[in-house]
Amino acid sequence: MRHMPLGLYVSRCNGQVDKVVDVEAAAAAAGERAEVVRVVDDLFEPAVADRIVRDIGDAELDSVVLAGNSADHYLKSLSGDHLRSRLVFAGLNPNKIVTANILEQVALAHPDDPAGATNKARSIINVACIRAELGEFREGIESEPKRAVLVLGATTEGIVSAQRLLQLGFSVIVADRGAGTSRVAETDSMRATVSYVMGHPAAEFVDHASLVDGQGWVGDYEITLASAAGTATYRVGGMLLADPTDAEWVEELRGHFKVDVDDEGRARSIDPRTHPAETVDPGIMVVPAYAEEGNVKDKIAAADSAAIALVLKLSKPVSVHYRDTSDVDETLCGGCSTCVRTCAFGACYIADDGLSHVDVRRCRGCGKCVVSCPVGARDIVNSPHDYLIEAVRSLAEAETEQEKVIGFLCGGCGYPAGDNAADVVASTGKTYPASFLPVRIPCGGRLDALYVLEAFKSGFDGVAVFRCREGHCHNLIGNVDMDRRINLLRTVLRSRGLDDGRLRVVDISPFEGERFVEQVNDLYESLAGSTSQEKGGPQ
Image (cartoon, rainbow, N blue to C red; front, top):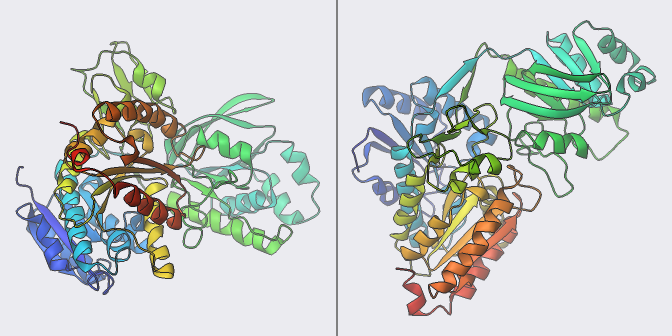
């Protein structure tokens, strides 16, 4: 592989990692790939961040691997987000900042197997370096955040949120499923707040509304509402869901944007403990629900938290959206429209030139169109084909004492469930083999049958796919698309003399760490009787 100015920073995570993992040996995985290799106590210490920034300038690094916490930590932690922001400000493209999870899915998952954990950490770091090397430059699209917010639901929380936003200089559209205007006007509680919102020149109420179209990203959304008065399109910087249990609003949002839902179909924040209002789409906030339905004080506090969280996102002078979509190789595209039929968000279209194109404001980067393309004309920025193939081959070289299993973990549910398994290990002492080697993919729909075949060909004894439960996929139909391919793939495996039971597909939620551990161990038990002939894999 070509030499590249890569920096590798391996964190001891204040003793949590090096209690189990030989971090120096794991860091050696970078080999000749890295220009700079450093082992630190904590990546989030200001002095360490300063050191990385100096290295970017002194060594002219164009990519960095941060080995330590989970990739999700950088979404849910203010310190993680701050570190990434500093590195981007120092000149790195976000697609060239790659994480290697050696804390939650290595050290904390395998506390009683230092040798196995060290080998696993080494493999995961090596794969992260490959990802940094193969990651393409991601285009940044700058815009001034719109100082307008769409509030969905004329509830107590919705009106309080609207008041806060109006007081801070934002305009507000309050959309309600029913007769929100008259219902709010007749309320006896918080009369002053209601009067303020209803009489404000920057507030608009839309009754009997439904969300029929949507596109864009934090700071710049285009939303079309239908009501008795007709349809109208609004440009807003963000959206606020006043009632996370409103199934109709949730389903309409999910038709156009990534929104995580729980088992009851309610909108869920990325972490109810640390980020109770923020969803997986950074421009969509949800008012946290409280058990006491009639507790107005809690409702007001929840509404405040959601409004302020959105204000923080929209108060920046410039918002930068980094293009994280699929790309089309026009020399291969035949304009067959398969991608158009596959895309759940309407991001793929055939233009006047007869070729497929991508609407970047609608594309969610799930990768289903990449897998569906019959000629391989598509690839995706966040998990390119060459990277996933190289990741499979690299992990297959890992030194293990037990059967070797590769786990494709979807970013919506499978990967966070793997993180959550660390808590299960800590509380129950029940672990799973360190020879289970994870690869994060954006969606179950991104899994190409080719990667499964490559895994068996490379010597893996088993393949596990952890994905969102039915009806919970962030990309709506990723599971359905995947099922079609998996059923055909099982037939292919049997035709090549492989037991299709060595391929395990698990539907899971982000917080089901116990199920994650159980399913991995169950697969290993089923692999125990594999024959040496089966281990050879397809040729």
